[in-house]
Amino acid sequence: MSLSETAVGALPTFAALDSYLVLEQRRTGSSIQLDESYFRGQTRAIDAFETTAALDKRRTIVSQSRQLYNGIQIDFDSLSRETLETASASFRRLLQQLPEVRYLKQQFPATCFVIPEWIRSDGAVDYGARIYFFREESAPTPDEILQRNIEAVVSDTRADFERYQGWLHGYPDCCVDWFSTHDRQQTTAPEVAAVDPIADCIDDDALRAGPPVSASVGELTDGLFETPAVYGFFTREFFPEPNCGRARRDGLSMYDALCEEFPDALVEDFFRLNAAWSYLMAQATISTTGRSERPAPGSLGREQLLFYLPLSSTESVSKYVT
Image (cartoon, rainbow, N blue to C red; front, side):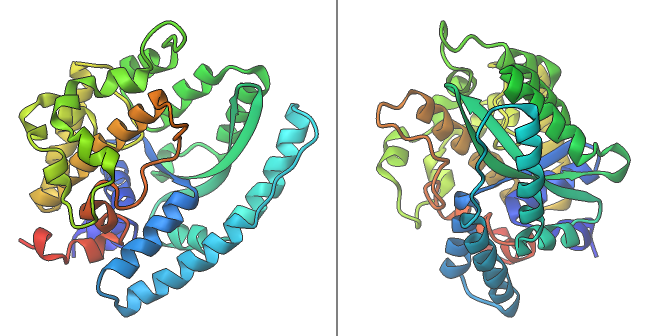
């Protein structure tokens, strides 16, 4: 039985491939943003494909978690380290009770934990949750990450925490420095600059129109693997510095490592989805419609829904059976 089957096969496919690279020491760590999009994607994926007993159990876990998560309300009356620490403690206790959090911790063989994530923008503070995956020997403590986040929010030094997060995820230092020090007021947003090398390979009209679920991500990203820039998109929350050789080399190494364990078609779709997801997020930064949500489940084609299923289920789909 392979490592993927024993270690990450029960995780959502997009998270399983990321965390597999962590176990293989290709990445320092990986993470999942826990939000409505995550839960909605899981539910839509399970409903769209043939149901098994295992997927019925997943549906129950996701449904219960979604209901509990959407009922969480965190309030604090002032912006200070003390109030954020108190709110964080309360929030984390609630997050740890979610069936989905317990499921992911049970299914990952190394270190997995959930913590609140605070974001300060335009004077306001918003909150979310993130689940981290690390090897046991290189895992920071949850409190370490949380304290770094709180310090950045209180002192309004977002760039410092972005650099720290880049280190946590094993991103190239050059790309992390470029992204975190980018002057968004004077130049093109770093997200937009990052996707420029692949922009000609993305069917922008189809993505903006909202392609049907029957569409394929391969059709939406035709010619993507004809440009070396694709290998810089080895995960969906990383925006590489344009034409960064280090990002491409790291990405190609990860691509090869994944192909040693998984079907080539699955790995190619992983990179296509990462690139298309990044492209849509970049477009959201310059949109005049006010759209700021993450790409809706299915908006990148049927493979995006497949990648919300457990890896063991996705690998059984005819497209990926070798």
